[in-house]
Amino acid sequence: MKKVLLATSLMCLSSFALAHGCPGEMKKIDAALPTVKLSAADMTKVKSLRAKGEEQHKAGQHTESMASLGEAKKTMGIE
Image (tube, rainbow, N blue to C red; front, side, top):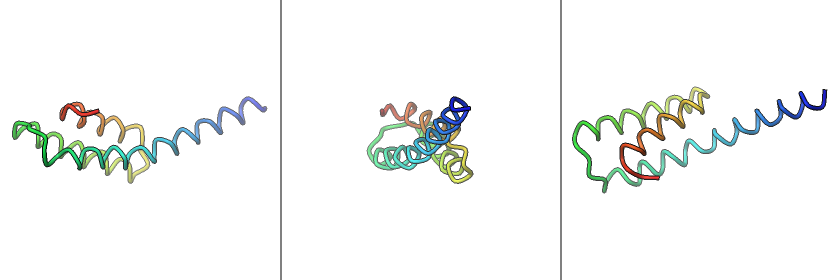
């Protein structure tokens, strides 16, 4: 029983950690957007992924949000 409770607690805590990571990733993207040199198509892709990540975050889909934001950052060439 203790193992189940511990596993459940850890899963909840990881969700909270990811939830707090999303806004930080969005801030990194927002800070780099004015200076990054991208093609028009890549810029459109980054902005779309950033918006998608924010919507996913608001919907509680933090894993998906982090994936979208990570793809945007990868396209931009930032960490």
